[in-house]
Length: 477
Image (cartoon, rainbow, N blue to C red; front, side):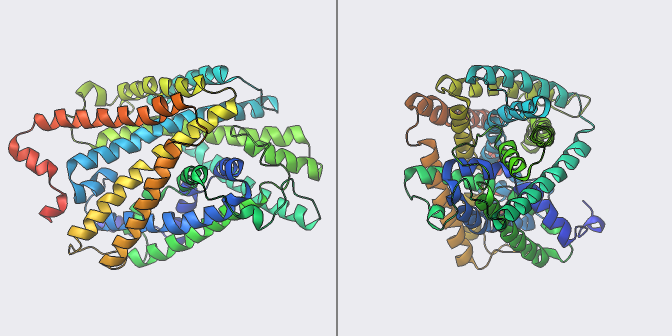
């Protein structure tokens, strides 16, 4: 991007981008099912302790690599070298494989609400089979070009925000009007039980507060430079944390957390609100279902093609075969997208085998998605730790405090993420076969494959090229 195009995003624009990248009403539902009202303070703490500092970490990497438009790969390579840059970029793509398994059943549930007015109850087997068919359809559509995707997703995202704000307002009105909440709102209910299960669920909270890497890339584009960026990010973090917390407090005004489902929870709370205010329930169900279905189906189409396209465009040529990374006429690596489809199938089948209900199935796959989502930020944090320890002298427009401050903050985050990752990988009460073959086995197989592929790539390089590939880019700065 040329300098003339820099500094073109205003503070409000950055605030809007941040909100769109981070806040999701479904995250409120998911964490309420697991933690109840205790999720409210945890959301606020997550935005303060994770989202804001991680945004600043990414901003520092962007500032260091200000002449590069690349993303995660370039940031990590600048401090840890090519191998760990590849592994980090690979984990970002790999996390999306688990994300699909949690998104697909929701799309099906919201389609049911949109077209039938209620959720048609399916078995885990039926849900998995329909999810496979839906994912095949989304892979075909996304690889053949979805030109209307952007405008549709933009409109539905705005409608989801409007629905969220209307729910907060109307549930607040109901409380003032004297309604007895389905789950009593009290300070005691907001204090979590600090046990192993809670540590595992914290990854769900951190996953909900994620999105920093998609926002921090704009540090060079904000009017006012890095100082304005830092102010807006802190303000955005506080705003999002407050909104998540308020949403979590009010989510059980009409429906108890014990009644909520991972698949259609958003419609359930609006249905409860419709009953209280005497609104036509079937109309509300269908409208919220249609908005949710359109938003999630658009998200599915976008995430089917975009991450795989970004991943193969970032990494060095030669790691994967030419046919695998080749772009079709729509600019999408179609073969890679279909390979992705084949990989996701067993990721849907394995948890299905150990689940008696769709709720159990969703609990397993959301938990694993949250656990896997800890890996990419963890690698970026390790790269940042190395940057502040060994290369703090390098010039950049922005730093997250002094060397000691930066190291202290990132060390705290690494410790929290490590414990959360282990706790969510080995959840209490989990099916032992699912834990071994899905949680542990999935991570070992995927990371082992990445390590093997990179070793093959390295062996094909000359000695001089191997040294250059292994060396952090900052050595040449």
